Image (tube, rainbow, N blue to C red):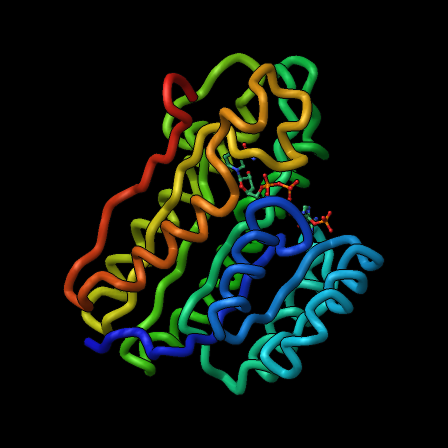
Amino acid sequence: MKTFPASIKALVTGATSGIGLAIARGLLARGHTVFITGRNKSKFEALMEEFRPYGDRVTGMAADLTRSSDVDHLIETALMALSHRVDLLVNNAGIAPFVEIEESTPALFDEIMSVNLRAPYLLSRAILPLMKRQGCGLIANISSVAGLEAWSGSSLYSMSKFALRALTGSLLSEGALHGVKSVAICPGYVATPLVADAPVPPEEMVQPEDILKTLLYLMELSPSAVTGDIVLKRLGGL
Ligand SMILES: NC(=O)c1ccc[n+]([C@@H]2O[C@H](COP(=O)([O-])OP(=O)(O)OC[C@H]3O[C@@H](n4cnc5c(N)ncnc54)[C@H](OP(=O)(O)O)[C@@H]3O)[C@@H](O)[C@H]2O)c1
């Protein structure tokens, strides 16, 4: 079991907005190397322009995680760009349509599952063997408090986020002997565009940078230590 290198290589999905953007910015500002990906091509290109001062420490590509061919291409491109070393994989990209079961459709089920669950599974499946060979690595899956509890309207989202915690559990068991950790982070409201319509002011929510700080904390733990699910809620509520 090894400690994380002083300068890590990370792959962050959903890096074009909200939590993923805060993670990418924070890692780059601390001297790490980051491969970023997001769905919207023009947002992605604008971000690459913003990150230009970081030179070859930042690479990435736009990819739609609902498309299998995009996911395959993403994995291939990211591994090439990172020279087949990944210390941190953050499965963060996600969508959260809330709809009651009777109003939901199989097409929406498929869309949510492909972004929130299938892509994390495929990325983890590709990267776990690398991390095992490295003897070190962290796969952080951004679940949700809706991955611990389900409410009216949360069914599809909760199903995806509960299952993401199941993926995390198996990754943790399968990586443990090789120094590879996996943790599910389960936030309540985080101030991002995803919850722009929430009945809580953004300044009272968990901040996107809190997720970055959680990842930094996880990587500072000794190689033999790992947490269970990390639940991050706003003070006084979800
Ligand atoms: N905000 C919260 O209150 C909260 C609470 C608990 C959990 N979470 C989880 O945290 C994660 C990040 O959410 P956020 O709040 O930062 O949301 P956000 O600001 O809406 O960002 C979502 C990110 O996911 C990407 N994405 C969405 N669909 C995609 C697709 N089909 N293919 C590729 N990328 C796609 C988006 O790309 P584009 O920008 O290019 O569309 C964006 O980068 C999600 O998994 C969410 O479920 C959020």
